[in-house]
Image 1 (cartoon, rainbow, N blue to C red):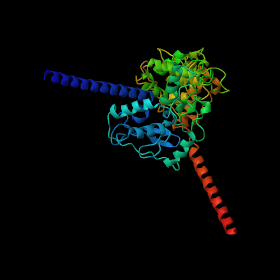
Image 2: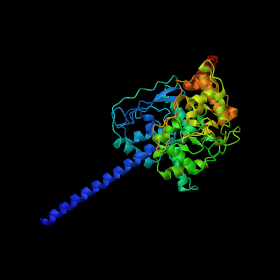
Image 3: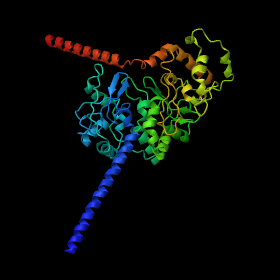
Length: 458
């Protein structure tokens, strides 16, 4: 009897031990999935301002209109009924559980490179580590013909490489980890690579810079003048972790959000691996860039000269120098060198690139950190969208370029500011698609007429 009790106790303890091991294993898998989700910045698109995490409903601005991100919590209105296979198809192939195609605003062309092991961990996290939220997302309504989701089938055949990341045996483990992070999880090329006429990435110009409609994702290839080839690995790591690289640049707009939600939370080894990979990306150069973006400009020799200028009768007619003195100098100093740890405009990459959109957008919308970045400046740059007119913003932007940055690009017009204020330039993709469909239909009709004429002739 005693032996029987001991055996029963041992079996019970063994069962408890197995359950504990399984629970620990599940927890480790969920935690790994959480890290992968963070590296992939899922929260940025699938969470509205002040809304429940991953509950969807956020409008993603695209050249064709707003695309609403769906609820991806494990709820009835989210992905609670998704099998692993359906989840995998949505993330890596852009196909929902109902068979409908997703638009590439969801970067599944990058996520297609996620490994099977990481996909299983990601599924475990979303099904077991995310709080379910019952909230339906608005349906995306794009203009014809893009409202026909089946059209994505042809686009995917042309531009989707569905193979998971394959390590390059000629490179180090650190480089391969950085490439996997950059190409798959962090999907750097989604924003920083220019697009062709079909809105697919131009892989021949990998990380060569691209417009996001309003903000501009700059060239981050290894080119010394056009890219970040003159940045050290330590400077890249600092930027990814804190949102600024001393004496070079600070994050703003979508990049500040990516750092706040995703990149700053990566471990140091992964950030270092990303820096190693970025330094190796083939250089993409612009012939007009004759020196690094962070080498333009110098401190203003006589910053007090503007105080001697008489003010105009109408304050709306203030010069760029007067506007700078009134709105900018308290933080950036009259000579442009910054104060109290706030960024200098001299040798600042935002003033050293040929594309000036980010300068205008920083003035329009400000630079918002909200203390989300661990070692940010801690102070938001004010938005002047409601305080300054298009002409005034053009004037003060040109003044900063002429005096602290790349003087030859100081030709921003009020019309250009107005375009950015209103969401960026209109896309040619819609009229091109409709024109192409019309041409295709005309060709089909012509071929049918030829067939009918020949049939009658016979």
